[in-house]
Length: 605
Image 1 (cartoon, rainbow, N blue to C red):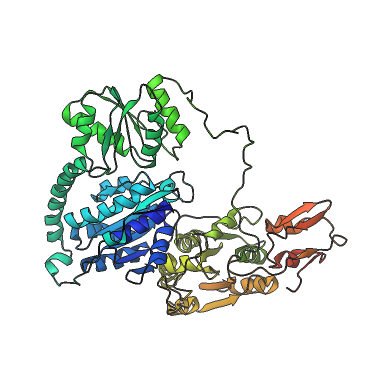
Image 2 (image 1 turned 180 degrees about the vertical axis):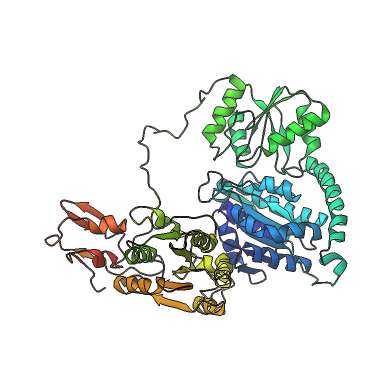
């Protein structure tokens, strides 16, 4: 046995490897990304790993491998499940052969997401089993159990860590390699009665699914991950995931500690275990993040068996209905429940908590980010013209911040292309722009471009090509030509794709050549129909910075135009002149092209 200090995502990946996973497919999204990257890093060559073009593609690739007897892992964040849900809902009815785990990382807060979706609720909706780990060690152990249940019941299963599990670090005890499962897929065996979905098959399998889930509820009541820690006979706390770990730690220090019910499989709910827990209780507090999944399930058990237990939680206003639940929150909730007070028994933070609060640091585009130059070029070119700028998901969402103010809408990945079309249909005199990154273009924007061409829209597509998937950690995509298996494959050309679907006006320009970029936008945007501008400049984090620009303080007139127009974090104003932060500046030179008096100089490296 080996013990390693691991991030939760690393523990999940190593658990999947120990379980004999054969194929891993996913799409990057915080907080899930490191799972697939760790499998790729730890791969001895026997596991196929890919960043798929989007979550739907990943789900379907894994389904084909699972049909062939392979153990598969699909990785995504909670909003990615929306993209993958179409094949997943049908796959639930068809079933699988090799174990299939769908790892969906939820993001309470949300910390880095558009929404606070709860995959436990989606699990109930889709009738798919769900495993909810409470620590990195449990995540490592539990994912192996998830594969066993997946194969036993021939169904995909959800594995739902949250941000504080995914990105927590802890010592994790790993299995010896000799104990690793070796899964040898038998290959695809033709059977149209099983693998081809028809209404008759779905009707038959739906009944089987309901019966199976009843059986799994009984199984889960005996599963060791679901448990009871005995305490007060009359008061109880029910929890799961990271909230259980925090509840357990708080309750451990109380003299009059309530009993604690741990729910590690929120669906199918371990009804028999819950019934045993509830039978001598008068009140139970449910502490869980996002949806009141455990709370509703306990209410259902009480109603079904006629138990007069007061179930408290989100629906009674005892627990916050949205956002992350911190350890201090848990302490306050339990103290209020047990003692009727909000006072904390112990300090809310480490010694030295008289330190000042951290300053507010809003997210901004990095110094030298080419997206800043792209936004600024479009802004300059379209000045005085009624224009809408439909944004998208990625680093460039930060173009909404002042002083750029260049993102008027942002809904979900790929939506900006179609939103621009919708606005244009209602107000044809508005010039409609849609910004999309190179990775998002491949993931979900191509169909929007096809829609625009087919329906004769009048819009300008702006592809911000920085040669990577930057926001989630610089993963490759089809436009880079590099795969997660380390191969150099076919690089998919964005211009060729655009021309292939019927976009005739396509121009390339370097946004850091400001005058050329402005001219290209002016010329292209005035054309009719669907046209595209591809701004090509690599992410500032991908290359060694050039020599920082310098300021001639004697020439600087203190107008602050560079700061007011660009908002680059490398620029500040001190002692009557603009100052360059050499630790941030990468020498892109955009500010030197904005300065009206030539006080900022870009020097050769």
